[in-house]
Image (cartoon, rainbow, N blue to C red):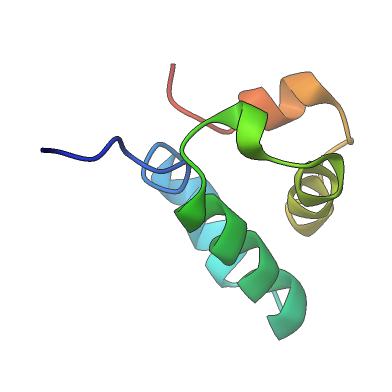
Length: 71
């Protein structure tokens, strides 16, 4: 049985690259960890979403979070 793609799999390549190049290792690893273990947006906590948007330098809104993924 094939498993659904993770949030990490559904991100745009340039977004994954930006996360991987973030200078603070703890924040970078935190974001990669929750993106590779969650399959649906609803599994993410508010703190995880905020940290990801901070790492990417985006305003902390739900629409900015949802725009990080392919439709």
